Structure formats: structure tokens, C-alpha cells
Amino acid sequence: MAINNRRRFLQRAGMFSATAFLGALSQPAWSRNLEKALQDAAGIAPADLASEEDFWYYIQQSFTVSPGIINLNNGGVSPAPKTVQDAMKRYYDLCNEAPSYYMWRELDKGREPLRKNLATLAGCSPEEIAINRNSSEGLETIIFGLQLKAGDEVVAAKQDYPNMINAYKQREARDGIKVEWINLELPSEDENYLVSQYVKAFTSKTKVVHITHVINWNGQILPVKKIAAEAHKRGIEVVVDGAHSFAHFNFKIPDLDGDYFAASLHKWLYAPIGSGMLYVKKDKIKNLYPLFATSENPLKDDIRKFESLGTRPFFIEQAIGKAIEFHDMIGSERKEKRLHYLKNYWMERIRDVPKVKFNTSLHPKWGCAIGNVGIEGRKPGELDSFLLDKYKVHTVSITWENIVGVRVTPNVYTTTKNLDVLVDGITAFAKS
Image 1 (spheres, one colour):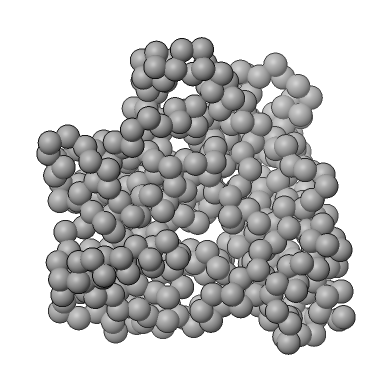
Image 2 (cartoon, helix red, strand yellow):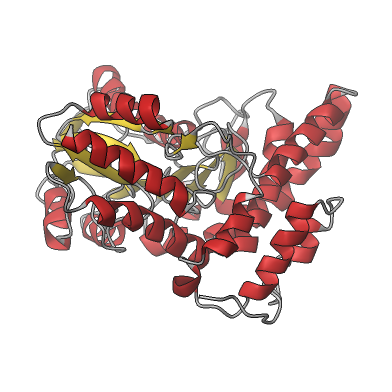
């Protein structure tokens, strides 16, 4: 479809305009082209824009992606756009002019405005947001900070992230709690099945349920709100692993009805590597111990007690602000529609290839960018190596519990031409 000239993008109150976002630059050709593309795309429905390659080509130009490799493992960590990279480098240079002065007296002043901007994106109060380094740090702050005692039970899934599984196992060994592990058959589009697997594991001793919003192995989206509602009926606290959901698709954290939530901002927000966010519902802050010792009162009612990390990379933290601007410039719904379109683009083209097995739903309620594919009779590592060696396509081999396949994760800078190469590679491998 052709893109017609329309009204300017992002002119509603409280949002960043393309001009404001790009104004700090010296306006190289790529940024001027992007600004024009954003103007032309205004008023086009996100679902229609998802397949408009001309528009997304200009988004691609915001990144410094390597021409020598097709990176389809953005689920591990995403590259940052140029503006975020430049901000981080600029802040790093500033820090090295006089570290103790510029870090603690200048850059640290930016934390409260950043907290406010993250809270706006998350849909919650700034007093519920702590800034840290990644989702593992945030979730382990919760796991080790919860006041659980011997005999208390936690419900979690075998398909959760290994760092979280190991953290609960450590609490089992150290504190005598008990973890009830459920085993999910995935992919699933059966909401009743997914909710019931958690509910059946609840007992009178269950104090906490741990829910991964998006299973990292295959991109399965879980019905967090429905599970949380059942948990709260029974007085059970809800921990949500949002590593792969925050800024991936359009939602607000309070929509999930969780008590605790953590995300890695270097995944779908495209912030610098080593940046994360922790959400703790206001009335839960007081009774949660911080992971790192803070003041003489670890049970104070202040979200900032979770930020006592010692000397930290201020240049990384402050560049998060540029990532928020970039996300807002594209728009959450546009981003979600494009990511889902890309996942379905490659999957639909190989669905009828013999021996191909999907481990991910194509339905937008149950999956977005992340896809997982297996080839009958072949090991995931074989396909992963074949794609890299023969087609220079970087994916990741997954063998975890009952999920066996290759995870493919495109991003907003991925083109359909990139995915055509992937399709050719998978097809050739399946027929070999």
C-alpha cells in the first residue's frame, strides 16, 4: 500500500514528536528520512502499517545492525538505536571527566525524572518503580525479599527462567520453603487449561505464585490476570516475570493485577545493555526486604530502598530516557502489530513444509514476536548451526523441559527480506 501525506505523528499532549526526538541530532540523512516517514504514516492504522516495508525500512536505519549477519536472537538482548548508543557514550565520556562529581552530583539528578517517565510507560505511580540492571536482579530482589518461612509453599512452572528456578530452589535449601512445580504443555491457546494448571497446585499453604508473562523459550503469553485473580481470592501474592513482555506489546503493569513485576529494559525497550526495572505495588513495599542492604530500616515504605547498588553505571541508566523516547516515537500499538506480523510472516511460509513443527501460537493473544520451530527427527542445534553456517542467520537452540526447537526473534529493524532468507534456510534444512 502507498503511504500518503498525513498529519504529523505524535502531536497529542504528553508524547514525544519526531521533531523533538530528532532535534538533538545534526539531522543526518537517516534521521531526516525517518522524520518524513513518521509524518507520512500518521493516521494509518497500526495493523495496516505493520506490513508497510517502506516505513519500517526507515526505522531500521535508526539501528547499526551488521550487514554480515541476520540477527534473529533479539530475545536474548536487543541492540539499541543510534540515539540511545550516542547518549550512553556521551554520558560515559562526561563521567570520565570527573567521575564522582558528574555521576553523583549531576547525572544522579536525572533518576527521578527517569523514574517518572518509566512509570508513565508502565501505567503506575513513580513511587512503585525502582531502576536496576535486569529482570533477574529485580525478580531475585522479590524472591529473596519475601518474608517466607519453613513450610510456606510457592507455585511456579518448570518453563520459567532458570535464574528464577534456581533462586526458589535456593530458598528451599536455605529456608525450608516448598516449591510446587507445574509442567505446562505448550504452545496452548486454551485459557482454562493454563489457568487451571496453576490453580490446581494451590493449597492452604501457598503464599506466592510466580508467573512468567511471556515464556522466553517459545514466546507463549500466559493469562496472568486470570491466574492472579484466582491467587488473590486465596490470599496468595503474585510475582510476574515481565522480562519479555514490557515494551513488547501494549499493556500497563497494573492491568495484570500482580503484586510484583520486573523487566529487562535492554530487551524490548531497546535501552542500553544492563538496564532493568522493578515494580512493587505500593502497599507491598514495606514488607519486602531489599536484596542489597540499605539504611538501618530495610522495611521502610520507599521504593528507592531497592536501588542501593553501590557505584553504578550512571551513563547506562540515564540513556534509558532516550530508549523511552524512541519507543514512544514508534508507538506501543504500532510496535506490537509489526512484531506479531513479522513472527507470523516467516511461520506462515513454512507451515506446510514437511517435518516442520511449531512450538508457538500464531494467534495474537498467545504470542507476539518470539517464535519457536522444530524439525522432526533433527536436533535444534543442527538447525541453529545450519542457519548460521549456510545463511548467516543467528538464532538460538532451545532444549528445555518439553520445549525443543530453535527460537527465532525478529525485531522492529528486521525486514521481510531478512525473514525470506530464514524461510529459505529452514526449508532447505527440513528437506535435507
